[in-house]
Image (tube, rainbow, N blue to C red; front, side, top):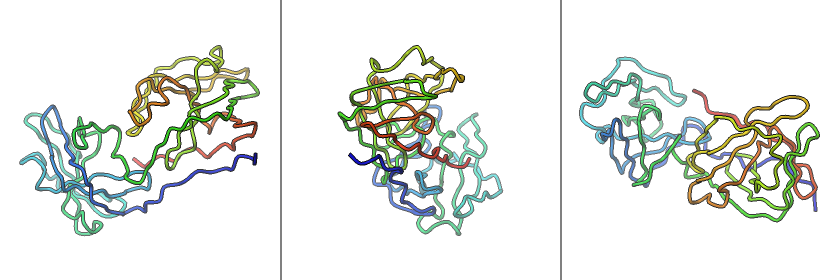
Length: 261
């Protein structure tokens, strides 16, 4: 078999791109609805994933107060607004797009994700950020053996894996726990969330003779139903360990670039 090629499919959506959202989008704060729309639009402020843009008319009456200043938002200016519900006040929670915004979102409102307590697409809650319609995530069983090493120490030697292919990210190899050297792994309190995979239930640091490397492995005990094949399995960051697939070294990918802000 040929050596493992480097790289993976990248994001294809340019900054400033706008598309309609064919889903009902709702946001709740303190248990109260802030917006409810079937007319939202996506706008990409970076290639990784979009933001929702909600028609101003679909925001609850009196929920937004103009702060009187503009923010520069990569692709245009937005007027900052405070979110107010009764005694609750969240400054800078949203902005209303100005006339220089991409076509289709002028006058719409975008909320900062953390300013809204719960987001829903139709009747399912969405976490971390909107799901991109151009991102695909597949979990495929594979009988190709996977060996994970670091500093010459074998951390895992598995006869098979579940490979997760996610647009814009390196392939991840999820391994059965019986094939890991648990004397080298130490649990941490880290928890991360993904809108496609769910919330992690375990992170582990790795210790070799050269030191301890924080949070190199993780697991989802209760992933989203689309990623159910990885439940209970453990994956390592390809960026920080050496992985051999079917006897061939997988080139270490560049660390994933995170969005600004």
